[in-house]
Image (cartoon, rainbow, N blue to C red; front, side, top):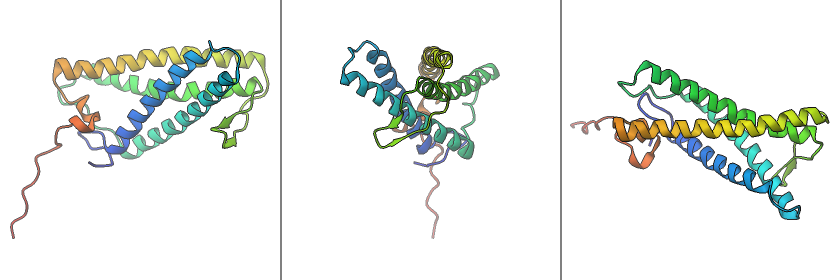
Length: 194
């Protein structure tokens, strides 16, 4: 399997980052939705610390993924895709990137504006990126929460569109992001004659 993206399909690096980020978002969503209702115990403090560490990891992986996409390019749309679908898909992808940056950064801003320390898996401290401010903390937490619900809607739309292409249009839109189900990019060249 190739590492870089080709005109026809995503490469191994893009696939790995795509599915790792999706899994991380699912974990963060589950943890974020459950930790708020936990009783005030050390377990709740640990859950919040884990959520913050996972959020910082997500931020790093999304930055890496965007850098890789800019370096390795992206496959061309599947042949026969209408222009309006290409535009919606492109807008959705860039909105997903924007939210995947905005949500962890707003969490960091909220943490900083609230005066909480921020550690990454108890390995090192990260600096505050904002001064103490109740108003800023309130705004940041709203961006964080509403951004999450918008991200969830876009992820569902993105997945739904991929499934629609796979089940009803029978094209490779989904298949080219699934290494186990991929079709060959091109027929293999016969071995050279000696």
